Amino acid sequence: PVAVRSSALDEDGAAASFAGQHETYLNVVGAQAVAEAVARCWASLRSARAAEYRRRQGLRSEAGIAVLVQQLVPADASAVVFSANPVTGNPDEAVVNASWGLGESLVGGTTTPDTYVIRKRGLVLAARRIGAKERMTVLAPGGTREVDVPRLLRGRPSLTDAQALEMARLAISLERKLGYPVDVECAFHEGRLYLLQCRPITTL
Image (cartoon, rainbow, N blue to C red; front, side):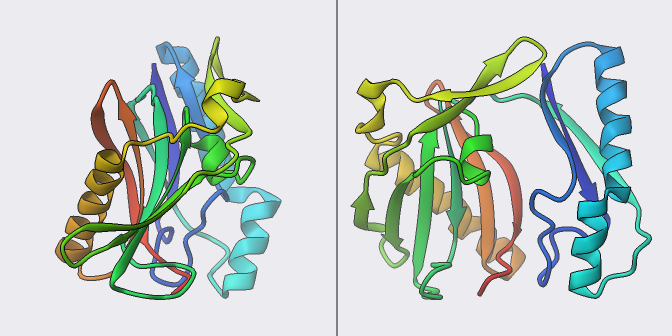
């Protein structure tokens, strides 16, 4: 199984992220299914939603689009990590938002995630808030589906403190290498951390 992800050539810039504007397909199996998913990703470049986003951002209407096919990570828990606090703008804090399962429910805003605030100096956990985590995305035949989180898991942290710190360390390392604050998507599967995507933070 693979993930088929689209990325316009002017996507993930410092001013416009394009998050959610173009298609992504998860748990795609077989050459024919991959080819069809790639074609649908290409077609999403010309969707009304993407065109309106471009217009609002003052970008040209015509652009190219790339499609990435990557091995699917069957995440036990997923997170979006910011190497600077996106709410307060504090560059000395990293913030981890995490929930159970694949990252689609998290980035789609259909679940209330756990939030960890980490002081970058010394890598110290400054605050932890356990979210309700109502919904999660799981693998299903031919794709994914969103389901209710089992009641026993809703009140449990989706990450250990050590895992949250490991994710923050990854985001801080990427910030240093790239030279600007980053927004990172990552996941844990069977105790191993996977980097899925890295883009500039556009809200600071």
